[in-house]
Every structure is written in structure tokens, then in C-alpha cells.
Amino acid sequence: MHLEGSLSPNLLFSLAYRNGITLPDSKTDPAFGSPDALLERYARFSSLDDFLHYYFIGMSVLVHAEDFEALAWQYFARAHAEGVVHAEVFFDPQAHTGRGIEYRTVVNGFIRACRRAESELAMSTRLIICFLRHLPVSEAMVTFGDAKDYLMSGRLAGIGLDSSEKGFPPGAWKVIYDQAKELDIRRTAHAGEEGPVEYIREALEELGIERIDHGIRLAEDRDLMRKVAQRKIMVTLCPLSNVRLQCVKDVAELPIRQFLNEGVPFSINSDDPAYFGGYILSNYCAVQEAFSLTTDEWKKIADASITSSWCEQDRKSTMLSKVNDVVEAHR
Image (cartoon, rainbow, N blue to C red; front, side, top):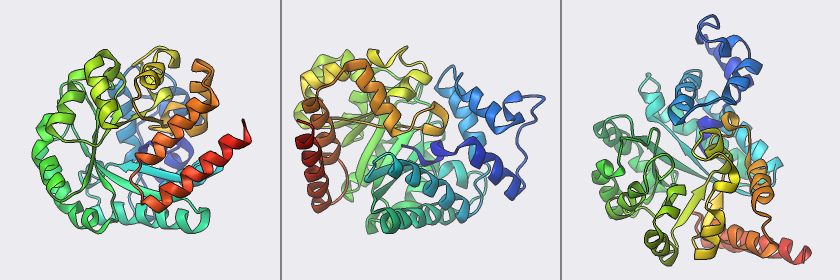
């Protein structure tokens, strides 16, 4: 889940007004006539790049640490209301530093929201810094340098790679991922969403990733899928996002059944919920409606989500115990 992707139209317009940010003229783009008009436009994305156009416009309203805190807190509160007890979330500092916002402003605002979620909601959280693949690798190196102390201290949980996938094979970021591996920093990357299955193989072999984000094209290469299953590398699926961005026409087309049959560990996630019309519970319900999973199959998914998370073992044990309690209550 991308924190910037939880920026609701109402909060976007509110922060734009508070911070004196001029949004696009509604005469040029009617979507910016009102929060409702913008929300309606979100239902008609034609591609990942079409979504990213609005995604980056939305980020322009985030200026102060309090804005980033408000954004993350709004998400954590919504997720908590839907039963989330642990959240590992992405953020894109380059999208902010590139417009003059200091890195510390971004990350400290998010960290404050994480601490608040832990103290007020009993929700454990992890922040994952992402590099934007449509920007030069040299800029990602600067961002990695800015984040290194936060990564080494544990204030950030790991690194990721997102943004436009087509035409940006992941191997270009090998130098950063090699450094991260040497420092024992956790690593993930978006691969096989709109891009080909070869991007998944490249991310595994050249970046040494420990998780695959999206990864729906993995099912196109059975040998690779079996290797992923053997190595217990988790795939973070985002069902409603895949439909909204037209990667698939329907949730039923996702390789959930194949992954279960082959033993590929995967989790269900909401990606950019404010833009894709569904927070975590909506994604779970959409999967159930499409696949009619059994209680035991859901337990496999929940257990894999916890086991492959980046929190401490004690926290994993607590969450696994909660899953067992729920399953036993519904047998």
C-alpha cells in the first residue's frame, strides 16, 4: 500500500486550500471541479500511466510534515476500522524532494503517524522507501543516501521500486540493491504488473529481492513460479488495482488459484485505495466473490502474509495466534 495512494479527494482539496496550492483548471480538466468529480475520474483510468498523472498531481498538496502525518493517520485509522493490525506501507520521497520538500519533512511526518497508530490503535507499522523508476538511477542513489541512516536504525524497514514499469527493467537499480544487500537492508520491487514476467526474473536475480510486488505475470512462467514457491518469496497482490488499471478485466482472471495450487505465498493488498475504489476489506471481499475460497485457503493466505512480513518474530507469533483463534471460531 502506497501512503500517497490513500490521499482522498476530500483531503486533497482541503490541503490544497490550506497550503495555497493551485490545482489544474477545471475548464481544462473537469475532474478538478470538485472532490466528487475527481473521485468519478478515478473510476476511469486507462492505464498505469494515466493513474500516475493524477497521482503525482495529488502529491503537490503535501507540503508540511503535518500534511504527511495527516495523510498517513487517515489511512491507518481507516485500515484499523477494517480490521488491520499490522501495516507495511510504501512512500515515494523523490516525488516530494523533486519539488523542493525536504526528505526529513516527508519521513518525519510519516513516522509520527506510525507512532500514533502504534500508541492509539495498537497497530504495528513499517515504512518502506520506494525509488521512482521513471527517474534517473542517479537520483535514486541520492535518495538512498538520505535514507541510509533511517534504514540502518530501523526507522525504515526496507527499500522498494515503483512507478511506471514498462520500459524500465529493474536491473538498472542493481547498484543500489547490491549496497542494500551488503547492509542487510530488506528489499522488494514492483515487477510483473504491466511489465513482462522477465522483469520478475530480473528483479529476483539482479536485485536479490525478498518480495515481489504485484507479480501477476508470474503465472506465465511455471518454472519461475515453482522457484518462487520453493524459496517462499511472497507476492503482494492488489486485486482491485489490477482491474482499475486494466491489467486484467476481472478479479477472477488473477492467478490466485494457480498460486494456491503451486504453493506460492501471497498477500492481498489495496495498493492506492483512494484512487482504485477499494481499501483492504473491499479487496478481500472481491477475491472471495471471485474464487469462493475456503476457510483453510484463507488461513494459508493470512499465515503467509504474516510469516513474510518484516516485523519482529514476537509480533508475528501474536498475529498468527489471532488467525488461529479466528479460524477455530469459524470451523
